[in-house]
Length: 227
Image (tube, rainbow, N blue to C red; front, side, top):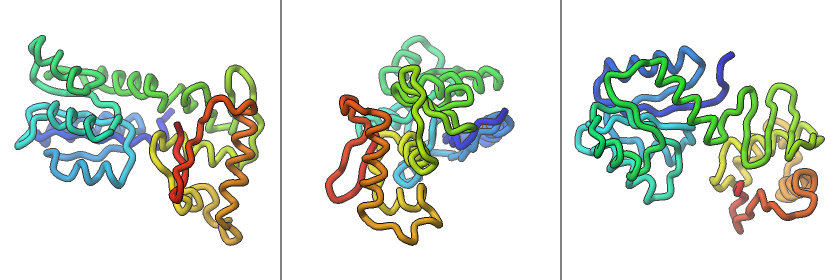
């Protein structure tokens, strides 16, 4: 079965390797976008929300682990796999210290890369077999079931879409216009500022009836983010 809505960024200056990595990831259902250098990547990250990055360290003009180190300083927590010819013990240690989550040395086996990608996405809570997991919330996309601490939570379709939208965009401030378009879509004709508040409050009471977990954080004048 193919993985849904998982986008992976690959930064690799050797075009044949970039195409090889993209081919094997796309073959199992991931969406990919490739860069031959770090140029334009930060702007892309400001506009999009990819699930994972695969980065070579020997890149033109900007060493890969240094680039990741600066991303981490700027608050980006996207999972990173280094795919590189730098294979000394000190290189591997440096890669992890600078923010890598996994490290694969060249030459590499494409099948192993795909398995490591899947494992890292699973550990990051982005895929959980056929489900999506965030903290103690498990969403089954196929049947719209929600389970929290082994309890089935009954949600309306609208509440499920709202929760799913937040979980797809963790730790990112989602403004009201984005939520309106993503969740309500064509049904937003009668949408107003109170619509999100009412729906979110209903959702909160269902998934956190004691009000102890603080899944959602309001950002004054903008919107909300998932904590």
